[in-house]
Length: 103
Image 1 (cartoon, rainbow, N blue to C red):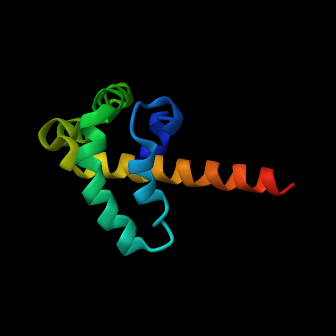
Image 2: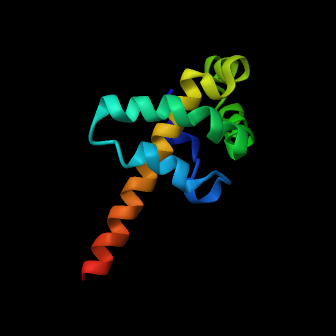
């Protein structure tokens, strides 16, 4: 599943941005990003990612991704893919803000 097409927006989901930053700040190192994604996804899932993720996947009609989320929750492959996408969004927005401040 291409989770970037789910329409989830990092700024609209009630999750801890600081917790997500463990993932986003490590994106340049795939092993470290994977480590932090595995560590942080269950907590992010519990604190506010669950409902927006389930709703978005239901709307997408992807039965396999939905079954993965329902079975594994914050420990599922789909939830981790969503967290990686949200981390990418956070990273891109932080870089844009930084560039704007430099101009």
